[in-house]
Structure formats: structure tokens, C-alpha cells
Image 1 (tube, each protein chain N blue to C red):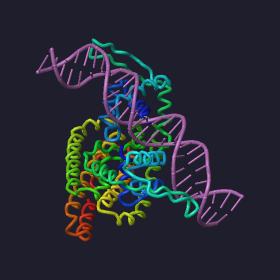
Image 2 (cartoon, rainbow over the protein chains, first blue to last red):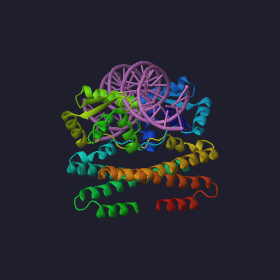
Image 3 (spheres, each protein chain N blue to C red):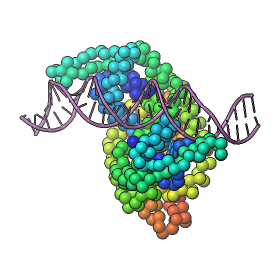
Image 4 (tube, rainbow over the protein chains, first blue to last red):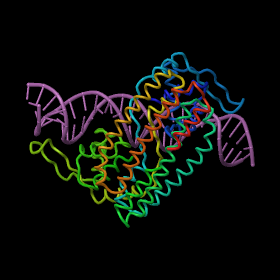
Length: 192
Length: 192
DNA sequence: CCTCTCATGTAAGACGTTACATGATTCA
DNA sequence: TGAATCATGTAACGTCTTACATGAGAGG
């Protein structure tokens, strides 16, 4: 399981509390990690029981917002993390996406509905790219690894968007000719 | 849950048995779906109980290989699938990848080990691309949607490989200068 | 006063993975 | 005879998601 290690990783920057960890992961690794409290809090508890983190401080409510539990890395946590970091990673990427799965079977459904869903997807990725551009600045403060990942994230978004537009064109023109013209369009997309 | 719908989708092509369904998903949707028997067989059972598929035929052992259970779509299955296909998809893509997660924290570990892991990854994606090229021909027999997805899969692989090589260069040259030269290399990569 | 954001947590259930059990056929 | 592949399945375990419960502080 790697959420634990994601938490340990973040605690290298500074001591944090659960709510903050979630926000961090969403903002900085949102393109590869969906996270929720049902994962954060039980994992923090377990990490504490295993001696990887300690509860450093509890800000009681009434001072500045509600109570917070600040967690801190222990030596053991640092060592465990370090070990994990240099292990061989287990599995490789799966771009598991409910839209792509549907897409694979669009041929068994209505073409106009397929085009609608593609348009929704295009809109979504356009917004996504906007939001990501706004956040680009914040990543410049991080180290080279985080910046490189951010670049990859942006590039992926743009690629998917390009592909969606290419696919849309390809599909809506599917009648006219199914070999020559479409092959030309495929080349056009590849050439970017 | 969408594995059920992936199964219903495949049964649109022809009647199939569990083992065959797994093989199909691995070969044709392997870049987005990891599948195992622990999912296939229980799901087939459930689909049968819900009336989406029927057991059409049982090839007993001893004739041509071990016994097979051929499943077939019912009218209800066709309708349910059709409904799902035109629904709005729920979530969006996460490229959840244990390597990328590690990568994000390479700054807290050993740089030479990081470079080793990157090299392993480069090797893996190079092999992956080779294998995918060999399979490219088989996708030409499918409809436009499957072909478009296959194109995306290939493109993604290539993109990740390019990025890994770019990252490797960037990291191994990280001492010399941390602003001018790296900015130039970043532009170089973006410009492809 | 009411709603939003901040903050912590739990419980139930859905989903996915791994390991195991079984047995036939094919090919070396 | 032994190993590989084909074929079906289950049980245990781990992970993830969803929904719920609670309550303080800030701002309109």
C-alpha cells in the first residue's frame, strides 16, 4: 500500500495534520491520486501505531479554528520511507478511466450520443488545463522532481484534449470515406 | 462498477467464456485494465443471476480441451449495456502509478538510485512499445473507436518514454546550473 | 442566524488482489 | 513422465469509496 508512503513523503517537508495532507495530495498529486478522509485518518492512526509518525501537538479548538492534530516523522518513519523509495516499484501504470472504457464500445451505441459525451469530455479537459495553468506557478517552488511531474501532468492533459478533438473529427466524418481520409487525419494528429 | 459492463460489451462481438474474456481484456484493453479470475468468474455469475447473460452452452471436457461455459447476452443485457453506454461517465482519469508516486519524492533519497529506477522504467517502456507495435495490426480489424483508443495508448507510451529520457537528462545534469540550462531543456522537450 | 470552510473521525459496503484448489489436454 | 497451457472457481485479505456524525470559527 502506498498511501502510507505518500503521507510519510509529505511529512518530510514539514509536520502536518490530516486535513492538510489531504489538501496537499489533491493539489499537488491530484492528477494521479484521489484521496479521502476514509483513507487519511485510519492510515495516520496505523502509522502512529507502527511508530512511523508521532502525534507532536494538538492545537485545541478555540484558539485559531477547530482542533488539529499535528503529526511528525520519527527516525523509524524516515528509515522506512527511505527503504520504500529505493525499492523496485511494483506495478505499472494503468490509465483506468470510465470514459475510455465506454469509448471502446461506442460502436454498439448511438453515434450522436457518443459525440455529446466526447464534447463533455473536451469541455472538462479544457477547464482542467485552465486550472492547472493557474497552479503552475506554485510548482516552481518545489524541487526538480515535482516540477518534472507537473510538466508531465500538463502534457498529458493537453495530449488527451488533442486526441479527443482528433477523435471527434474522425468520428463525425466517418461516413464520407473510411480509409483514405481517415488515414490522412490520423497522420495529421500523429505529426504534432 | 464497470467490469460488468466491459464483459457485456465484449459479448456484443460474440459469445464467450470466462477465460477468453480475460484474455481479450488483457490484449485489447491491457493499457487501462488489469483483470483477474477473481473478478471475471464472480461477475459472470452475478450477471447471470441478474438476467443480463445466459449460459448458452457447456462444452464438456474430453472433446477439445477442458470444459468451457459459453455465455451469451440476453435482451435485458443489451438494454442495460445500452443504458450504461449513454450515461455520463462518473470519474475522470487518474494515472495512478507507483513509479510516479515515488518519483515525486526522489528528492528525499539517493540521486544515483533514482537514476537507476528511471533507467529500469525506460527499459520497461521500450519493451512495452515494441510489444504494442507487434499488436498494432490486430486492432486494424476493429471499429474506429477501438482503433482510436489503440492510437492513444501508443502515443501515451511514447510520451512517457520521452518524458523519462528528458527527466533523466535533467536530473543527471542538475548540478551544473539550475535555471538557464534546465529551462532550455524543458523548452526542448515541450517543442516536440 | 445561517452557511461555508475547517477539522476529525467511523462504519458499511463495494471493489480488487493474491493465493489456493482442481483437473483435462498438449507437446516435448 | 513432466511441464505448459487451458479452463473454472473460491476464500481471505486488503484497499477504496460513500455516507454519515460531530462540532468550532468566520463572514455575510
